[in-house]
Image (cartoon, rainbow over all chains, first blue to last red):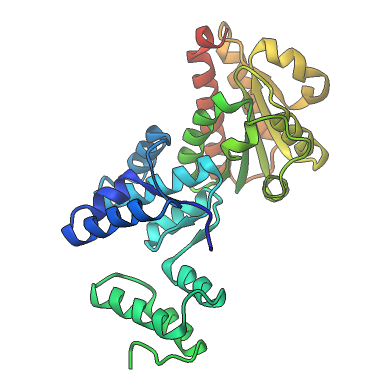
Length: 150
Length: 156
């Protein structure tokens, strides 16, 4: 396994729970995999400070801020794709990675075959998820898969 | 500018995280050792903490109530690495720290907060940093001061 434990902050869960399909999927994952845990025990005031200082009150921003504060409190790495969230993690001097890195690691550890890596990225692209698609095409080329932009 | 925040014990971590949030939102890179470093007496600093200390330009310490072994080791390492340091502590803890941190210590006396503020400014004067970084550090120092002064009853 890549991580011994994956903690999902409250605001991230709330965001995922907005859609019925992702809510059902996440709840099934929580029920079936013990390494994935709900986590609410982190300092909400520190999160509020970040959102106030950055003058960002958007709900999706709270997810990133909660993930960063939680990771700092516990000494964990943080997985964030959003640019603002990545800058925040940098300010907290955290080990920060994106979805690209996670799938790349899965592939390097031979947990996921190249075709599945491509398929996963294709699904995310079809769902309109914002990711560094040029870097993803580079990765796909490196692992012998055709880039998505073809 | 990279800042390492060393806090006394587990109870002080919340204050450290809030300082970290303020510092990061104002352009500083601020590291706070995770909660597990304050659980039990660790014989040595963990490698991540050692690396972060080594990378930091400034070590900001505050000891609210108890000086944990991890905090003591962090402050000692900061001294050994000749880091710019400001350590704030209540008088009763300050006595314990005075022998080896005298030059870096700001005693937070709730009865004389202005003296503590002057102490922070004096320390910042000695630190070589850009003006905006000094302002951010002064803000963090003042905030620590405020947090320590506002909670003296709880601590004693």
